[in-house]
Image (cartoon, helix red, strand yellow):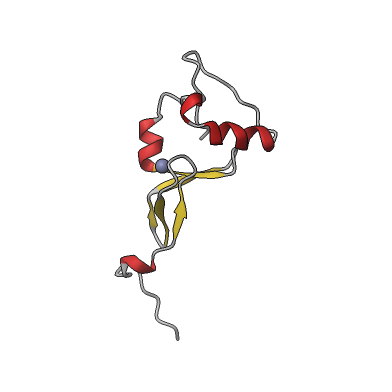
Length: 88
Ligand SMILES: [Zn+2]
């Protein structure tokens, strides 16, 4: 029977993904999730970007996101502050 281990995984073996906003590699897998998938946008963002943009994303700081949304036909909705809310 295969041994099922929980925890104790070397950090180097935790998969990483790139945060779409800051383009840093974040740990994402095996119980370590330093970000989340924004399904509505089809991207992954890190916790730092999430907390740093809790009021919404400043569009001019993230032209790449706008390009991504436009090319994928995602509606760009701005909140009262003119920022783009990150969907849950
Ligand atoms: Zn980030």
